[in-house]
Length: 178
Image (tube, rainbow, N blue to C red; front, side, top):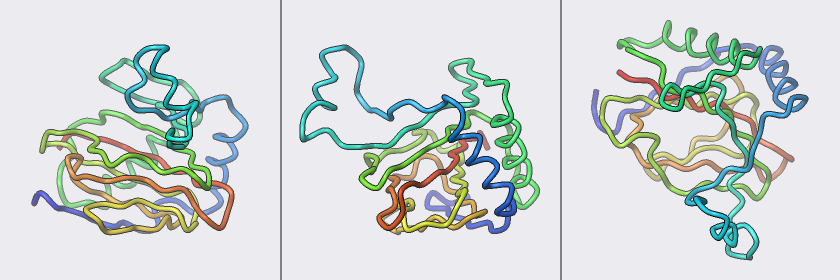
């Protein structure tokens, strides 16, 4: 698999199921403020100043490295999404590493980052609804399209953007070992 690998897979789940997932995400207390480099109480100045960037909200329903497993319907939905994607690709995925749910507001924008630095990981961004937010990978913008997954090597630089014309954007970021 080449280093700049990107694959788009459509029609993972129907809109009605995606709306059920969004309902679960909205009505439960899952999300926390997304952050980078907040390790001490002194670091919160980043969020209290004009320089602080709104990176949206997130939470892990599964993270193998930190022993997180949320026993809830949202984890079941993540597993179904992951399984459906595995059926549609032509390479082997060894192991699920994490499932990270994201909620972006109109002003949200993440920092340019890699999900993993190593070459043997794949990232999957699954969009729960169509909106004008999206993800930039290697300087190419991919808008959020309901039921669509974007697969790319986890060591590729990327960043997420909130929508501009509607209130929010929801997606799932999966990282797996290949």
